[in-house]
Amino acid sequence: MRVVNNILSWKALIPLSRLTYCAYLVHPIVQILYFASVKQLIHFQYITMVIYFLGFLFVSYAAALVTSLLFESPVIRLERLITNKFTARE
Image (cartoon, rainbow, N blue to C red; front, top):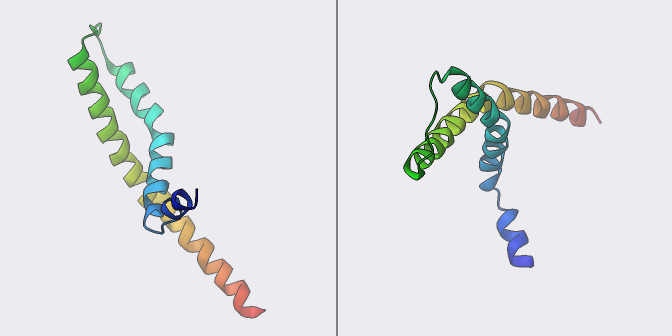
């Protein structure tokens, strides 16, 4: 149990966890945008589903990276700035 806690508490995983959460939020939007633009029926084949999976994975993580850099990172920095300002006064 302690080994799992040490691995999951590793500081290098924090940016990956933020990116993964952002991808979780962006992924349905990517899917809706794609399937709303499809003009013909999609025939189910395993290779087609693998290509869709990999494409959605790549686009979702790329959109998550952009979203994280544009919105989440500035808010985190602003929060740290405000927190440091209030702790310096005390």
